[in-house]
Length: 483
Ligand SMILES: *[C@@H]1O[C@H](CO)[C@@H](O)[C@H](O)[C@H]1NC(C)=O
Ligand SMILES: *[C@@H]1O[C@H](CO)[C@@H](O)[C@H](O)[C@H]1NC(C)=O
Ligand SMILES: *[C@@H]1O[C@H](CO)[C@@H](O)[C@H](O)[C@H]1NC(C)=O
Ligand SMILES: *[C@@H]1O[C@H](CO)[C@@H](O)[C@H](O)[C@H]1NC(C)=O
Ligand SMILES: *[C@@H]1O[C@H](CO)[C@@H](O)[C@H](O)[C@H]1NC(C)=O
Image 1 (cartoon, protein in one colour):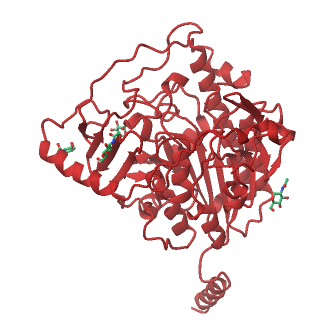
Image 2 (cartoon, rainbow, N blue to C red):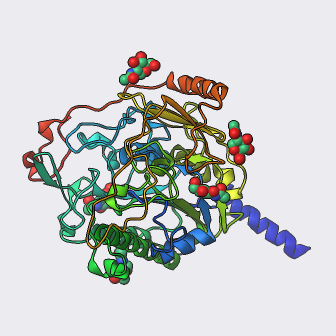
């Protein structure tokens, strides 16, 4: 009796000293670039990702987690919690020479997490604007940044060529980071992440955002990883698979550091792709239709999982609950003990679904509503409506095995699409059967919903290329200062 009372008293004091809450969990948010649905070992045994597989299988595999068709728009979702057709980023990526950005009025996730006491770090690809310092990571909520501003570059030289321009693109905070010249980016970023983890004060909650360069083009990997796949004849596929295995090792090094420091004991790890795989770049999305840059499931259904040693009530299963990239923002805010106070945000906290294994709070979402072309797709329950063309790659692309050293993709079919198409994603996740002719009343209902969503569309902001972006004007570096 006395002992129990003593324990209770100490618990009370402990809770009081901790502000009445358990310590806030650390969050590690890993994003792979251009990783296809079928490019993870837990789905396709051709791909060797033993560490990712282990985390996925002892965590929760996300089977209905949607992303945008291309890079900048998905990253916009992660950082702002808004669909890109609400921020002006719906029409595509930010090109190196175009002064695009996510408007400053959107509070980025790390800004919000800093208010909640987090240390915030980003390692890897930004791709959310850099023409002015105010659009860059350390001005948008991150304490530190090691990475690059543009959407793609050389993995060793860290240079990006675009149009007639060429420049180095790697930074530590706002300074050019030339020490990493010649070093493979997956290693540079893993090492930096390990440094952050090892020097982190355990009592401060950590938000570590890790948007890896891997496995985006150009296809480059140290030979020891490519050599794991000597049996794959197709050279691009062999290299691409090697890049995934290097990424797998990077994640292993990071989780080792999390174990060593004990951060893993109160941590949520998320792994997701930013969009579907580009089949012409050796990725694979089978059994899904289409690929990166299309509104088909192959472009928008993201490979991903979550893992935690201590926070998940239910583990080791496939979660089929519907979620979208915009949901991470409010989910993390809730996990951090905060509240999402923005009633207009598109994201919905999926804390209950992810942490407790409860039902999804989401019944519908916008795949995208393009501005220039009007092409769009929405989801409502089982149903998906498309308007216009979902994109120019609309086949079910086989695993590349075109022949020794060859990289000629197969001839693509040419389709004539109806102006509106209707798919039942629950019964037909691979989009083989357009039901629009069979269910005109469902098409009308879905069209109404699309038009409703569309009312809040903002114009796409895709400013023309600006020669003032020329790296030659900044000592050979892609740099802020031209908008
Ligand atoms: C980056 O910024 C952080 C936070 O201001 C600072 O502690 C660190 O020393 C900076 N690192 C470099 C290399 O500029
Ligand atoms: C993982 O760590 C080992 C040991 O430090 C290192 O040799 C290897 O290059 C690291 N791998 C990556 C992808 O960073
Ligand atoms: C896009 O839709 C609007 C409204 O439905 C229409 O006025 C416009 O002509 C369409 N533009 C294109 C390029 O189809
Ligand atoms: C869509 O598929 C689900 C699952 O098979 C089914 O329950 C539902 O009735 C279907 N909806 C339509 C409109 O066919
Ligand atoms: C998971 O997603 C795939 C691809 O869309 C689908 O084929 C499969 O049926 C889904 N699994 C479950 C259990 O819903």
